[in-house]
Length: 494
Image 1 (cartoon, rainbow, N blue to C red):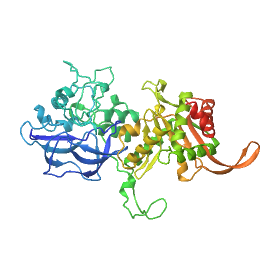
Image 2: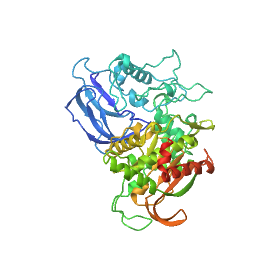
Image 3: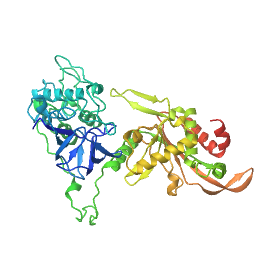
Image 4: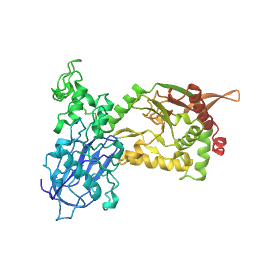
């Protein structure tokens, strides 16, 4: 590979995402591109983002087609330098830049240590990565651009003999495609690739029990996949990747179980794939319980109507008022604004937060997403309303950032907009509670001993029974319900 050819690999787009779907190329082979110019649109499990180029030059090759799912760390685009020394840094992921054979990055991709010394190819790839960091180039998080020089990047401490890089040493703003260490006998494996490490941890696979098929015995992603799909099979015989039975049946074929013709097959990917995985994890790990209560929202509607008369274009929506009551309730019952964590050693702890990031469910064309209002506890109802509207718009446009979609501590779900009264909601993992609001409808209600028609809604709280008991959950739910029924007094005390 020519030293003037710069290979940009698909970066980690945030929150440890491991893949993205290539939606559309914004450049073509032969085009001239500038640093930070958008080159492609990709869809992750969280949002649609534009990928900027860290290099300037001429597009030499596009590594993928629209509709294809690409793994983080795999080549995305190759760019030829416009002239000697004109690029912002060394060739990304190219072993040639370090004087090693061009096959080195592929051999070391997604590798972890197996107890043998790292090969020359792996060492060369590691040196290339360190050089890129010093130059301030390479794969960067979307939206952050590229550092302007050597002072912008962080360097990695180097040891003279055995190099063991802990996960914390991997820069957050770059992806490390080809770095490996060694495993000291009797010690835990030095796992470098975040993709392989996460895959093995999620599926309960011991890396020490796997014999690697990569250079110098390095464990590759395919080795972990083989251990997951065939854990009883001998390690020496790596089975070919299994092809799902559903994939072999073409559209229009007859389904064997029902005898009906198959009308369509829709791949589960992007947001739908993320939602499926998150909901499955929530149901399998969280022992949830649910409490609910009917609430007279007449006073809240009347108060908002009065405010609307005074300021027709600057009146918060009902959801914003309820969000304000929720943040106040979470301050009073902080156990519901936590996270339940289990360590690798089996230890468990409840993590509390100094603040509230209030998530809210938003239906989009790409599926259900949960953007979150950061530091919602510091905002008024009017400020909450503005932020909810802004986040809803960017989420529906597919432009919400991973941070906006993945930083919530509690979720508010207004499923009443779909015309339903209640729901046995699934908690938005890894949060521990979710409050649902049903539709507001006319119902008979007893007021001062007499029957009247009132505006009534149902509040439903699903909570993780590991973090609190029913008393706490009921106390929070009753607090929010009382605030809705007496909004003037509640807001005066907030």
